[in-house]
Image (cartoon, rainbow, N blue to C red):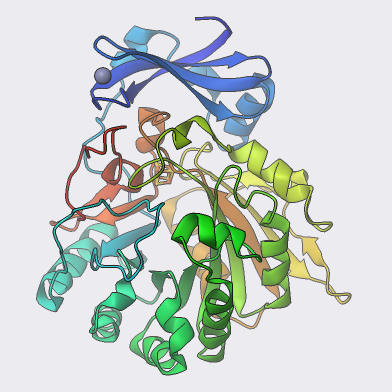
Amino acid sequence: MPGRLLYHTKSVCPRCLRAVPAALLEDGGAVYMEKGCPEHGSFRCLVWEDTSEAYLAWLRRGGLEPGQLPASEAEAEALPGSFDARAARQPASAALMTTNACGLDCPVCFTRRRGEAPRQPGLDECAERLRAFRQRAGEGALLELCGGEPTERRDICELAALASGLGFDFIQLNTNGLRLAESPELCARLRESGVTTVYLGFDGLSEGPYLAKYGRPLLEAKQRAVENSIAAGLAVVLACCVLPGGNEGELGAVVDYARRHMPGVRGVYFQPASWFGIYPAGAQARRITIPGLIRRLTGQHPDISERDFSPGHYEHPQCSFNACYMLDRRGRLCALTGPDTRPEPGVERLRATLRRSWLPSKSPLLTVGGMAFQDAWNIDLLRLGRCSIQIIGEDGAGIPLCAKYLSSSGGDRLLPGID
Ligand code: SF4
Ligand SMILES: [Zn+2]
């Protein structure tokens, strides 16, 4: 194992998904995960495009003391939890899988599998699951409606109204936005039904990223979806999936588009591509990690600097990064966060921050952040154990999103089914 060892953990073999010992190490100014499977050999995956000093400092800022991480394989072996277990922590936000139908057939998709049987739980089943989830997660829990594409459901407004009636006051619709672009009426009905926030796939300001991800030009539709949502009083968060070699040069343009559409657009959330679901063979070798993404972004927008960003504190610090900006009188983004920002500990605080940031509001604030979801090449049990974004299971219990979608290089899932 060349390189400087940082700590041990547990991961999976990307080919057969069996749990295997793994180590984090620095080599040549970047941090990698290394692991081996008795059957399929050894694997190395880039996890941090910066030095170990910078990586460990980031962990510390996120409340994780590197000295307490497993120092040997035996210590890692004794870690609690497993890759197919229920989430160990309360979620900040959890997603109800509403359907696996989708009007698009994209060359890259993280939530679907080719040939999967159609699945669309009825309203009664959804109600039962939401009740159980609320009981477990508490009244402050935030809800996401996910798919597939949730607007493929004809009864999506009834479903939102049902969730609202159960007491959910933060209901986020995760969508490709195509139906919202077609129909201002649908946007209005969604808002009236209780949907508060549209989490809209928005990957750039040119057609290149849409051709790469969706296989068709969609920029105009995406922009119309933003406009229709804002007109209906919905808060919009632009969810930008960052594909290496694809849209990595458009990150600043996405933030600037958000700036120009404040306060209707309340956030930009970057997701460096993780390789699960449907993706081109060999794509997993190309990676963008949190420091690499922040570096690209700061090089592309004059108002954004590396010092604005902090790690998540409730989830594992390697999972997420965040900054918050205010629009000043000259129309520039002015950072309200910096190196001294102390993330608020605890799930209720995190939920309150998300409400403040992503509910409809006239305040001139914009959050810019993101999450680096895990895949079979880099999944780390230490990260799963602190997961804050979950899928609502049959009994209302949360399943870490990264475990739910984990798929092997051959496309097999550890936890099959959409929900
Ligand atoms: S969904 Fe994955 S990346 Fe996000 S908090 Fe959970 S374990 Fe971390
Ligand atoms: Zn294996």
